[in-house]
Image 1 (cartoon, rainbow, N blue to C red):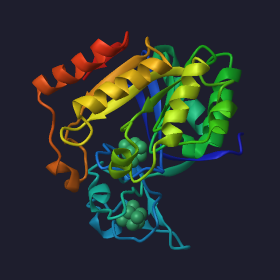
Image 2 (cartoon, rainbow, N blue to C red):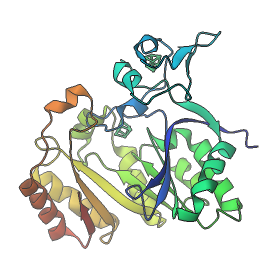
Image 3 (cartoon, helix red, strand yellow):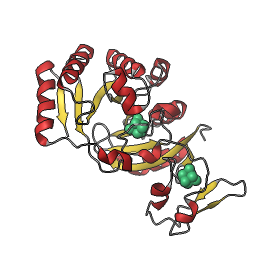
Length: 285
Ligand code: SF4
Ligand code: SF4
C-alpha cells in the first residue's frame, strides 16, 4: 500500500472534456488561487471543521467525530449538496483522505473504457507528491500503463514540481487567466509569473497539451490584450492547442453572477484575433 495520502474532493469515472479521449478525473481539494469565476468554488479551501454545514444536511449525513472533526457518511448522503451551498468557506465536508491504492482500484474497474487519467482540482500541483505517486503507480501497473496521465492546472507552481512529474506525466492543460499581471491579480488574487513560466517550460519540454483562456467581457477581453496574448502564446508554440472558453455563470459563486457572459458574436471576435496571430489549433467553447 502506498503511504502517500491525497485530499480528494471527488472523482469522475468518464469525462471527455478533461484531456484527450475518455478520462478518469480526480479532483483534489485545495487551491492556491481564489478565482472570481471559479466553477468549482467548493474545492478552493480545505474544510476548517467549523460545523456550520452539519445541521443543514437534510439526510443527517453529517456529524462530528470524537475529536471534533466534521464527518460525512457517504452511505447516508442523498447528494443534495446543501452542505456545499451552506459552507461560508468555499469548501466541502465530503473531501476525503485517500491513498493511491484506493484510486487504482476505482481506475481498474473503468480501465477498459479509458484513454487516461487526469488530476484536476482545486489545484493539482498543490498535492504534487500525491499526483507523482498516483501517476508512477499507473505507469508501473501492467494493466494500466497504457493510460495517459495528465494534469489540469492553474500553472502557479515552481519549475521543480514539473521536473519531478515529467517522468510520469504525459501532458498538462494550463489555465491562463490573463497575460496582464494586474488583471490576473484582480481575477485570482495572485500574480501570474509562475503561470507564464510554467507554460514556457512545459512547451519547451513538449508536455503542454493545451492552454485554456477563460474570457470574461469587460475583464480580460480587451482586443489589444488578446492580440498581445496571441503573440506571446505563438512565441511559445505557434501550433499549440488553445481553448477559448466563454465565461458561463453556471456553478459560480453568487458574487460572480454579476459578470457578463460573452455573446456568440463576441466569441467569434475573440477567435478571429487568435486566428490572425498564430497557427494555433483553436477550440472555442
Ligand atoms: S485555479 Fe481553478 S480551482 Fe483554483 S480558484 Fe481558480 S478556477 Fe478555482
Ligand atoms: S464544509 Fe464548510 S461549513 Fe462544513 S465544516 Fe467545513 S468549512 Fe465548515
